[in-house]
Image (tube, rainbow, N blue to C red; front, side):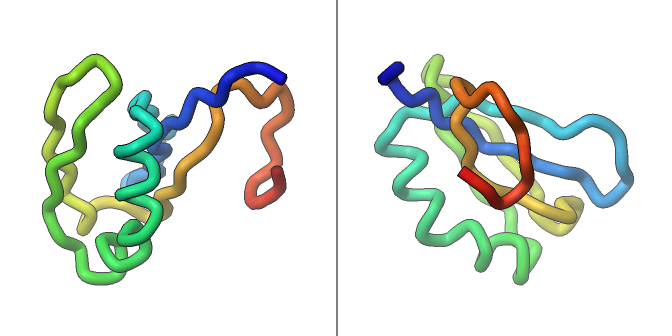
Length: 80
């Protein structure tokens, strides 16, 4: 089995292609706990990417957000 490559996937309310941010396993676990809260409240959060960059995300502009594995070949929303 290939190593997982977690990523934060953001679908913006304005539309367009989703934004993908590669994450460390630790950051993916941290975000998983609070991601729905961030979207519900529209808060601004700092995200640490896998390449050690810090990204500020304004979740008030996000329609959907989830953690996904970039290694998966098929993409069906909500199914693993």
